[in-house]
Image (cartoon, rainbow, N blue to C red; front, side, top):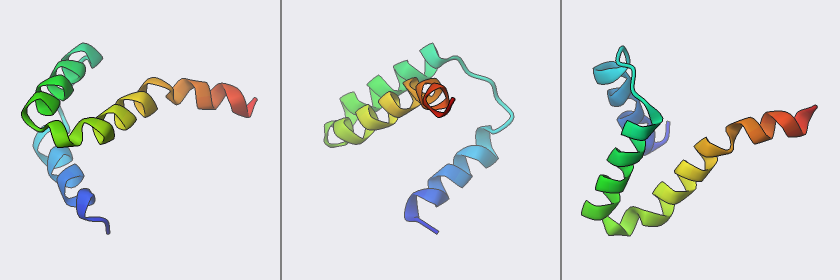
Length: 61
């Protein structure tokens, strides 16, 4: 188990039943980076990966 899995599991346990928009998630990521600028690159990579998930499906066809 990766260290980050604990945070992901906590997120799922605490907020797994909630529904959020990508606009809300984007705002939370911006706020997080504003408060934690050292995490700008990983957050950017995560956001880009999420944004392009459908592109990967199209490449498999």
